[in-house]
Image 1 (cartoon, rainbow, N blue to C red):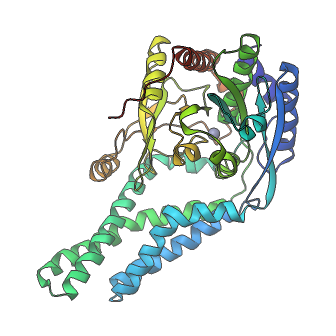
Image 2 (image 1 turned 45 degrees about the vertical axis):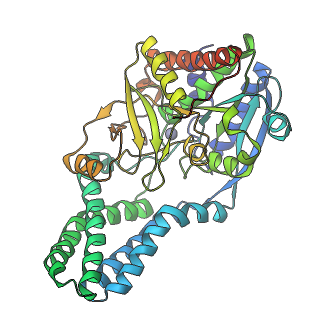
Image 3 (image 1 turned 30 degrees about the horizontal axis):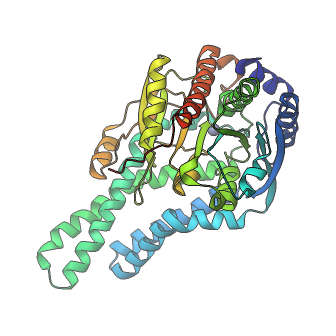
Length: 436
Ligand SMILES: [Zn+2]
């Protein structure tokens, strides 16, 4: 078999597999059957996600109303109330929302887990743990965005960073007004300017968010075929598992995970990390994630994530994947994940918890960063600020005919080479950690 052959089977035998749809269950059965065929120790891992699809747009609209209220209070003289509202808004976006979502999740789904020699649950429960690598991908597929939403992406690339710059001006405005109150009267012109800038820069962003979330509620959406997002990654993991089973690594235990409900907010991987990461060792656990690996020319290398709490990826893991990509003649794009870069994937929850030896494979072409996005990246000191095209995913066009087999196969070769190199590095003797 090959990754492309597995992908073809998955698309033909299962098709769309959105979380909560019958296809999701079919995908779980299909993956379990492939694992049994290969002689892997397979198990299913039940977890919960937020089932109602209206939850996300409704909560976004609620937060949007909250933001509009805070801005209105701020600029209409009720500065303290506005500042408190704005502070709570930011607190929710950065901290509370993620925490709350996992606790509101009630709908059942399953991750499919497997091991080359023993089940992953065995390894998690073991008191003595050797080095291990988890190769993973999400198997669920998304809904399609409305066709006009894809065309608006170019406009959004301007509006969104302008909106964030507007929020910074709102922060300045509140600061200047408070300074004015305590007697720094000379800051008043700056306050007036910041208040107006906040309103003007935020208006297009607020309108775009209103449009997107209202359309999510009322515009009928079909299922995406999901060949690249993420049939490609799903098939890659099956194919690499097949190769490792025939020729297993000697110093590294390898496990596999196919996550569910990624498109609904990374639920499968987040719930797994929440429940089991405390039992795993950060310096002995490697993660290799594959998401959308069958179309784009370039390979994205995630150098880290976050804006307030910055979490860089492990330098050695980064250097290894870049070195291997060069050997396979694959061009790379370095990318620090923030709201600017667009979506994220199942490596995110791991890096958040300090599992920095995490590499996510994504084949995608680079988009030009809009001038306001460049300005914002400079202002916030975001390293490797880049954006990706990602035009074909979450659309009808993400079908099998759009997959480029040479891209998918080369990425599978790269994933295998990465695992074998980690294995070989462990044979070379104890790793001496060099702290900078
Ligand atoms: Zn995906």
